Image (cartoon, rainbow, N blue to C red; front, side, top):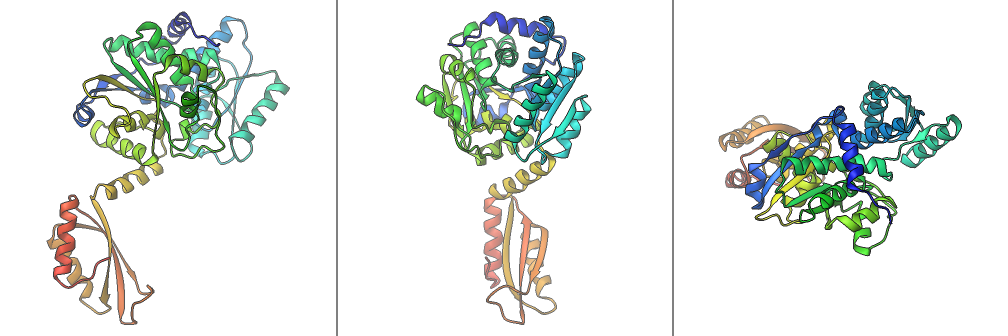
Length: 401
């Protein structure tokens, strides 16, 4: 069985100390009050390149250099691993090629190039990019840097466990996102060998739950699909190195829904002023949804990364405001004549709602030629305020959808 000794992780810590940030461990009074536990946030979203991936990549390349293996490196990724490898290769002054799918967001391509790597766009999905990366390795004698299924990468990720215990020696529980398993296996191995009494839990998205299934079955299981907003943990095939380590050292693996992840992202922005990507928000989602009971415990939620597209943040904010009854969308059919809309808007304003959008629809099925349906989006103060607005409109004779 694969083993990862604590000495390997400590050596990784020594290598990485002059390169990376020792990220903050912030207490959250908001999440503590909501859960009944004492909740801390490990802010790896503020790490260089915006995620933990730089730890494993840097340790792997540092180990190569120690062995005199100063070969070019190649990785296939459209996300955090790409930027971590690019930064680490630049730091150690060796060439790096990152293969990304053709549809990779331009901002991620530019960020990776900005760290000094050569970016190759190939294929329509990760598997195509991986095949091209393997071809480049064969032709150029380069070394492929696996994002998770590599002991030296895992040891680098495990340094997070040492940092957490250094900052909070009496922690009861550490909650970690899991995709391919490199982060969870590294942290679990580090923590359990330092303090076996600390509980280590992994969190996966329901739509990408290969590690959760593997943990329950006691053997490596792959899935045919990996569908989730948390692209950082959307992995169909976890590692044959990571899964045995997780089986040995982790205590539990739970799953959360995409809706629970989105709610956690919004709360982290609102209450903690933290920008966190979906994978990084999954531990908070697990705690807030009650999937992991933290009452009466000192708990660390690892915010593993903060690289989230601005447009996606906007979608989460919009949907979250509707879900929390702070925005409403409704329709009213009016006579299509002067003054009708003014009267309607006056009632809405008098009820204290802030109108955001007004749209006329004269083609709606079921209305007559002298009618128009008006679709309105407005901002309200909560569910009770929204209900009062609906009551005021119905009291004036309006039929509201």
